[in-house]
Length: 243
Image (cartoon, rainbow, N blue to C red; front, side, top):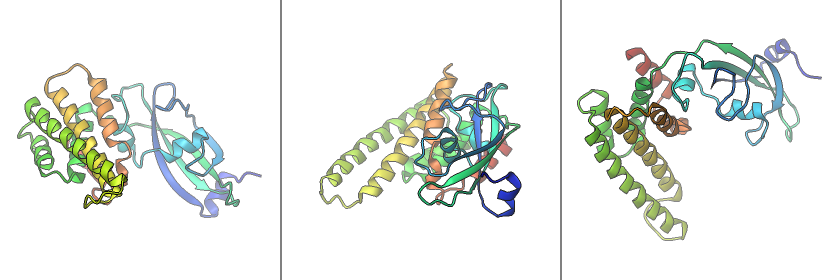
């Protein structure tokens, strides 16, 4: 028999809180329809259950949910908060209890999304040139399309170099760098390339705002894996508060 909401809370089984942005009809980017209610579902990350997938890929704050949205936030977008408890006792088939509630979504402009992405990638990149460029962009010292194009092209070449190193490492050659280190550098550099491309488009006054938003979302999706390098929640709050 499923536990009630109060039984779950009383037993101290609270696990996590996540935020999910949807379109006006309540559909996520993965085409799962969200609605207020209480749900029992598998608790494993490997589960294909729609609710389990939503919980495991939700954002850690309302701002991050909006910032990582693959499209501009419009007045028709909706935000849901999910609170999840693990309640199953079967280690082979753990179950989770999730409550879903709709809440007000913060209105974040595309420019704020981009500023967050520039700051976040600037904090995790090991490229001194990219970090210097990102600081110049954030301080309005240089937001030209030419500078964005230059750093994008430079990092694109670095991606190719890292991919070459990765190819050699995967075949047992000693490149002086580990497989994991190469993968991390490649992933971070690709994120920086995406953001440089986004700033290049916005500097050129490109009408493709959806494309810019998609680039930002692709660059920031899963960036929480580098949480030891930068506190994304704090960074999002800072960008939002400074407008």
